[in-house]
Image (cartoon, rainbow, N blue to C red; front, side, top):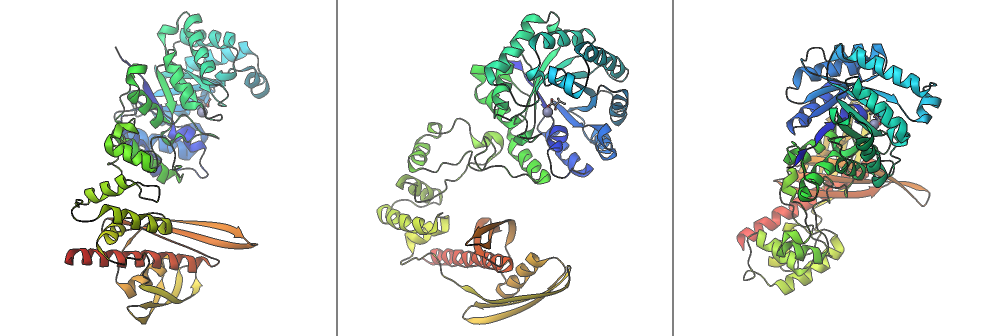
Length: 513
Ligand code: KIV
Ligand code: ZN
């Protein structure tokens, strides 16, 4: 029978430690609600002694979360334990998570004690914490570098004193999978009362082993995995829970475990966390990266069209994504082009695939990425050339009395005449540029995202602006590089407007055809 793996999320504690600026209570509540919504078993809400703000956040989270167990971190110090318990006091059941270094290095150089003193300190704190709750987790900090004899001895003592969950952290991400797995197996062989506690693991990713170590640990007997969605955490981060959850699901026959997690909420939760924590997810990040389910090469796209299983071990739907369209580039083959035309409702009777593919390759080499409207245009409109510059920037100037009093004057060549717009804005220069372009063109698009990158070339600084916008449910991209950031922004937005005008023209032509 499959056994359950308990999922413990520490985004709000270990994850938060790693952020450049701390989260406010509202942001933490939003993350906690998303974690609860995906059925995370235990949410580590914070380290209440660390700041009054953290204490308040834990209190507020306790008011909102109904189904996940709430846990707070505390050192083996009475005051830490009291404050942790106080922060969660409105709950009937809560967990206190105690931690103490057990490696020789931590004991001697950090805590300036000996091993016996560490054991005594642990026992004292457990007794104290038991005044508040029965649900105590104890972390043997730096367990990955603790001698196995000492680790077995302290784990036995902790269990004897009533600890229900023993956490074995690889605090500095030092171990490799078979080594970490051996530590867990040894505990199961050598600690006589091991069956009276749940063994948990908490792996850091300094050598990129966190997920591998966690999976090996459950194969050796651990039944709780700690980590964070997206993998944020101290230094190189914690175990990425989305990877663990999907590995357990995808390899269920091999691993023989299950989790209670609603995996189709993974994508949504990762988006919430990355937005609130202001961390970007690398495009190739397993499970949640934007490339994780996209297929680029012609051979792969063709294989997927024939049978998705050829190149997909899980479905994007499993993490809450819709089926992802192929990215059409010069690497895409005929099959991908034909497939996209089919998805748009055209059969080969409507167009000539051979001619279309030839034109497609030419345009893709020039343009990089080909959109649906490009394909339609190539298929049905003669002499389609990518860029018709409907709008050309003639001039832009601005003046400001203060940061929130900006005047912008813009001149555009549009519809064969020069248009001028003057805008006064209190909402910043980007908003002002957007408003003045809108005033002339009457095109309303939604600014979804923009990125600015400064690059040094020939001893000069260049500003590269990249914008993503939405218009009538289609995504448009605009980019420009200039030494002047205002110029780069304006030109990128004009790039988007030119693409939108072209898109509207194509739609009209196709309709009239
Ligand atoms: O990495 C670590 O050892 C920790 C403990 C507090 C569990 O975060
Ligand atoms: Zn940690």
